[in-house]
Length: 107
Length: 122
Image (tube, rainbow over all chains, first blue to last red):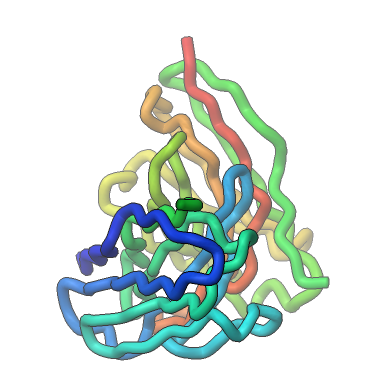
């Protein structure tokens, strides 16, 4: 199975900060990586697919880069509604594994 | 609009079975697959398995093999996930999500159900 390791697991940031989350895959997955945002009590929401394509309706402050084994999610200017947990997911093969999550909290 | 609507919360005793439904609307059900994902309280997301809504082919997570069965009813555009021999560590929110039709690389799970809480307790 492909393992995904996110870093950091937790980060504390202020409104307006630039935030970067990294996701490393245990083997190459081309660009078959997605990023999701999850708020308490809610289903995950798709932000980025194919490593760098913004899902329709998602604000442009979110961006994704990477291919192969190293990927990043960047929030260019953190907004109050962005405080949540973020997950990466590989869809190159089965099982469709997720990273362990990165919780973004208010400093 | 395109959506997946799941059945309501369940409380089960250890050893029992649970069957969660996921009704699709707003798209052609048989041109996609459905994956199931669960999330234990305070924990991350765990992929459980996939089913093709076209031909019923399935792929299950190894740790759940033998305890989980995924099915579809194309007449009602509904997917089902049955989990047997429930244990306390099966307590989780269970989500369905739209996946691809066949076992090929995919872009993302773009549509998710609202989640179904399953509590296993004596």
